[in-house]
Length: 257
Image 1 (cartoon, rainbow, N blue to C red):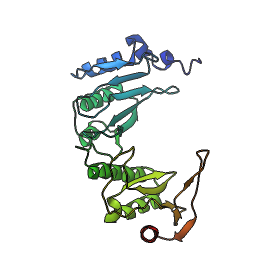
Image 2: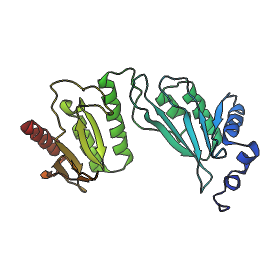
Image 3: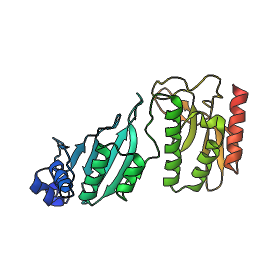
Image 4: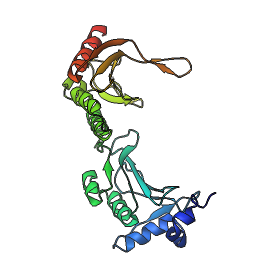
């Protein structure tokens, strides 16, 4: 291991404490915060976690970078639903004291919007914590993530596409997701969740992509090959606006049933 990537060289103060967990507890104590952090057995100088009392929240993960003195945080949760835990908050900073503040807020069940205000480095994924297994809450949380993801990508046409789809009530009721930045829809919530509702228009047959600086492409859905690879479906239409692409996708799905 080179000196540059040696945790003790990058984090000499953490090495003195013995672990990142202990250092986080000390950083919290200096601010009047009582934290209980767990240390990583495999890499105690760079990894630690802080449990949360909020229903459905996983322990906040704190990880030190291997090439620069800096830490990342990741907070996953599922609220009161029985679905998978997904990223709710993340962020990077070189201030261990700020991480201690966020860790305490995460542990105590502070609302996500409140945690964002605790420290400027915190980034919300756009998801919220569903209060139950009602598919409407899961879908709304996913749409929040897609809208935030598009804005964070600094890709105006992707924002235009997501917002155009979100504006249509018949699409806003479907579970939307992206793969390779292609917008797709499903009537079943992953993984193996109940049907969204009966009688909804199904867009499993089509997908939409922001294909360039000012264009959009509507395609038949991608086909999965035997080796696990996927191949793009046939192009249905190329359009100049997201609204037109969404309209054609809806019309094509209705025609195909």
